[in-house]
Image 1: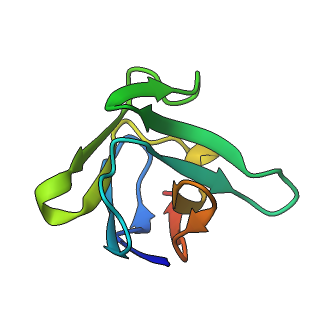
Image 2: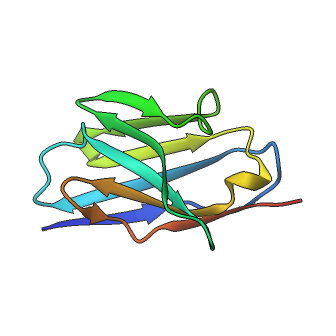
Length: 111
């Protein structure tokens, strides 16, 4: 079993930045494969960024604005979001294989 606890989130103005963290515990060996997803009312959950074997990959919506990385020593994964837009509003969850999810953090981008 793996437990994922997300921290961060909240209200931010357009153009602002925010960092999300996801701490893993339990039977986790590394966070070299993991991801961040976003869900919003009426929309499907979509991939924001992930990392496979330590290599990051970004959805188009995140390229150039978001950064994903991990710290295996701390069992923590991060998502740094900058130049946030109203459309980035949603609930952000972390994921590790095969199917473990964090509880999610609400990010609201609004003036």
